Length: 444
Ligand SMILES: [Fe+2]
Ligand SMILES: [Fe+2]
Image 1 (tube, rainbow, N blue to C red):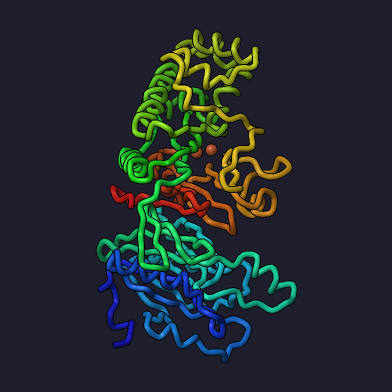
Image 2 (image 1 turned 90 degrees about the vertical axis):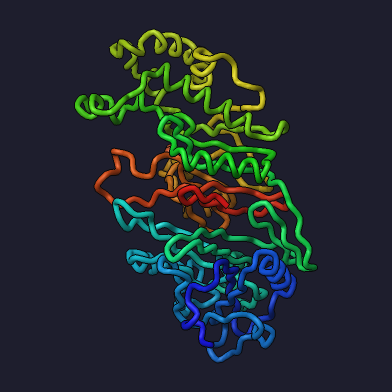
């Protein structure tokens, strides 16, 4: 039966790209079969062109479902056959405009990339992504070939279809022997699986006073399942009470419930303690210095609190602590509800916190040499890392960007299409990265 005729019957796919003329990565394929067996999933192989257009796909791929043309997984996501050559350095180049349709899509490539395209002021953005490969590197010994080899990723994408419209996807990256971790389980080439806690969970921008209850609940479930040893938090403080962008918008502020600084800090103190209580006893939480935290620094630095009568008393106290070199956010939290647990650590802008080589202490708003942060700049400067700030999940080479846990359609983005997503990220005990989307109440 042709694949086009069996659209959307499978509930879970595990997909990867195979270059024609290249050798299969047998360890990876066996681990993918292990996944398929344990999860009742289908292995789908997307053939891609490499050095020679007329080369053949290796015979050993025959036993899998070969997806060699456009193929709908459900009404919302499809595999797009784009004839991307294996050595193309950026497989999503030129495809962004295609995302502005009604579908998310996946293309086959040995590189893993992900972007979210704003499509509608109301609907979830469209995800466009490339897979990673299940064939071994097979590049020419020239400039393009050698660069392409550097970004070759043994891996793929798992797509879970919940119904005709809803899906969740996760990229996975393989270890040398082909094994990989998806969510809380490691899949091995020998057919075995093991439950694994992760080393690190990078939580999407928290913005606690405007957090989505579904996204927060999904994150707590992920903490229970993944039992991270380290949790990294971005933009924990929303700063609505001291936001300089909104300060002079008298009508807008009167229409919505702008919190007092004191109550915003009390709420955040509660939220951080709540998160800590959901963690294993040995988990450490790191709060990355972020631009929304610095709303408070700026509010104090500019002396705005002097005219802001409801917040003035706390403002005076914090300004004094700031002048003595204390972090205003940390001190503010202490002043309103007492010291936070020692397992919660506040990072400074110039701290360099890494796990398995991934830089985790950059928020993502500031790029190299003081430029505005962007994935390409991070890619060539720090190389490997996880950032937040943009609120839209992305993968660019070894750089990963988490989304936000806040409401996806706050008042200040109303009327324009948004690409914000609820997406956390993890690093496994083998040092492999994975983004973890939360779609509505689905978190795994
Ligand atoms: Fe943010
Ligand atoms: Fe931010």
